[in-house]
Length: 282
Image (cartoon, rainbow, N blue to C red; front, side):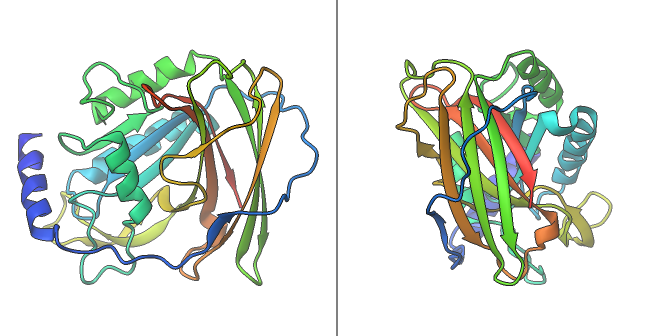
């Protein structure tokens, strides 16, 4: 941990002046593409894990492997997002793609820097052994198991319509309130686009040179809300429905067959706690 912290500081000084190129990729809340809402039935608690990683982080593949093991254990009850951000995230000159995003850097700033890597934030809550919201790898399983014991306070349905000819994705998010959330100080909705199985360079413990065939999972590509989420201003009483529509044009380098929409409802104010998360392929 101390070594990675030292490397992190050194890397930050070395790469700190590098700019992240802006992505010209229209994302916006669109005209309504939703049908009349239907009751969301049979949805269990689903836990969000935001893993922070980078292609220059030699220990991060172990974290990604641990997250895949947990994903295999919990299935759809675990919603994973891998965010390339921080001092280990700048791409190599030979990298095929830039996995780091402006949105990812904003989320890292919003949730707080870790002491070291691998690291992840589970449902945006504090757990024993963590540094603020950030948890080391050995704390992930316990935090996920603890969160799965709680009932979801909101339910989420994601309906995706993708036009391959125009590479336009229309998304309808339907929320059904399981509890009365009007008493909460503020409630937010965050919507992301991730991509699985992105082959690109990654530093690993097996070699001093980055592996060009490394397969990156759950890569954050873009967002359909602000990085901190969009405030819900509708009636949030128990049983109420809220629907939001979004439209995004996928970049040519993104494989639509491997893309997923991730949505989660979370609190604002003194806590950022996630009330429910969901994920749906295109």
